[in-house]
Length: 581
Image (cartoon, rainbow, N blue to C red):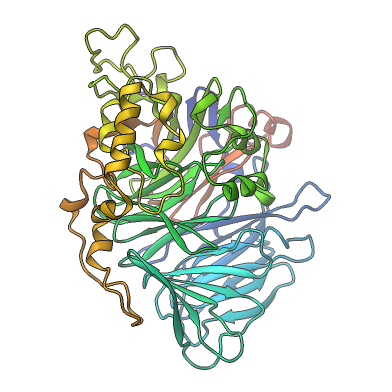
């Protein structure tokens, strides 16, 4: 089967692809699925999801994976680039009646070889806590559906906690639970704790402590996914109303917002150092948002349908040279960054956390992230220096950054760039003409542009305009750009504080919330390959491999360059081209 180049029919599924690191290869013998290996008929079913945990046991076989297919939930030893475990012998298997698993998450903090805590969310709104090693079901939360009757869209343990977890629902509500507490026998009564633009947080009012500890009402429509920052301090949420909202989790304050180009946002992830957030959604785009500046710095177009998962690759994200630790946030942010990553820090993350702000930045930094979509395609993207630190703000040329060429000297030159007369430098770098449109940090943002976050990478002229704009757009002024907020700022202590009013997209387009397409650089994918027959629902970057899964219930492992050769001694049956035989 040919893997590269045109001339072949478009529906052909790729089993390998090449990037600057080398060849990635699909490993057919490392595939996981239901024991019968029959493609799952996924019509009307919830997305297949995959969760990993490492049990830190001495055998070297510490990785476990859990995945849901239809009404079924499976738990296996995960062998990575080696031959998969015997699918007929799952460690644990559950089949549910009347409700389907929709999402799950392991507690990495408490996992041991003898016991692991797995949360499972369901289509009818319940959340189950199970131990697939001990084969126990310890607790069921929202059992009577008194807290929320809608589908669970996302469930995650709070980073660094053995007992707290957060659950998002299709109702647009999120709930904070403690595994030690009961859910009570009556519907909870709530008391307002805090409200802001398009969000409200309530505490549970009861004589004895009970679940949920907190109820968050966020935006309009379903809350599709949330993700904690690597330091666990911030929470990024994406909703069906098309908004990314980033909160300080402990202080329950809105840090910043962004609006999709159109349609709902479906997925969100953080860069390993917590400086950037990538979202994907119904506009078929991936959008890169700067956490420090609270603004869109790039969009990527490669998918032909909705983007279902975005994820950073911490193992390919590279920093060539590091300087002393610096962080363009508050002192508290800095302190938190020192405890950065908690249980998931690795060398790349710690190098990235040392990467400072623009004042004395390292020689070269490249963030790698990936996306998969309903178009059955996998896209890989590089976020490079020319996007992160633009040097030519006066140039009025817009370039499509062909990131494939970003490692060669003429970064960003793809043939359609225009050099402004009098500019002796190489081709103009993207984002140039976006500066005037996107300098206002979002209201409530912790660090201002004046902090020097962007200042040194731009010329004096741009810096002046940044300061001027910052002064002109005072926090109060800027709130008019948050159209949701200005519609729903009626203050009342009723439960439904977030007024359900449609946001007019025309009011946000062209503002810092949602810059026009021509105002931010457009990334092109490094690779864009059709890798499945059904829509893709999983993308996870591991050290030796990339894991993808599609709605048919096949969990595929792609060996990273240099990692596949290890197979020859262990797995003679693997065919040289990595094609499914």
